Length: 264
Image (cartoon, rainbow, N blue to C red; front, side, top):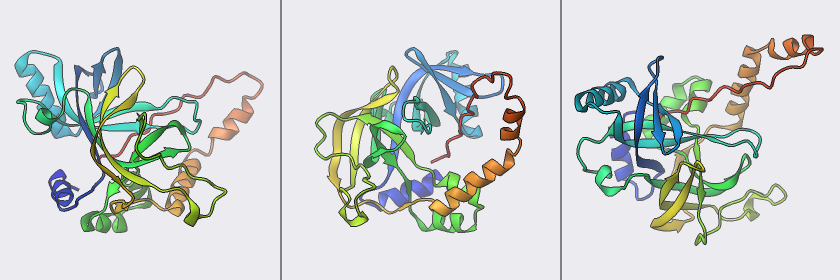
């Protein structure tokens, strides 16, 4: 799915899911050809496609600097336990060469967040959930894609945001209430500032009025998610037996591998 196609689809819709913003910081190139960016006292992984990676590398070399202003998609990795801190990373879209477009519209640290305002089970802070916008090309893709790729492609981003005195409440699912009696879900469009000290977004202003009419979006089925989870467990059949064999010796706490967020 090309970004040009997605942009044209978005322009034809009044409302659409989007999370994009501007960040500045020191760029670090790791030995394994990966990117990281330092924002304040924090360092974040910077996911990048080869073309964008090389373009940024050449620009920094030409300017003889390691500082850059970037246009990025924010990504969040949540963990099963609500008290376990989420992790932030960013996907590189473009680097600034001249203040134009979104680089001119947004200040450093500002983001456009267009999505569903709600609580999710694994995060104590309400989130704006960014789902995959629906279009025919994407539908054709997921119909022919393997289940694991399909689930990864449709994975949503749930961005924690502090929104004091919000004009509508975040949706919170109530398992004791029938579907038709659940609270209302709102699609919101806000400008927010990223706070690197707390790894969350802070509400700045409305960019559109909240609405109960959600844009069409793609979402993986529970059946597909369960199938992928089962395949992952099957691919690690020795994990549990190995723990039992070594049960007499205290085991170190397992280090969870970071999930790789999907592209926009």
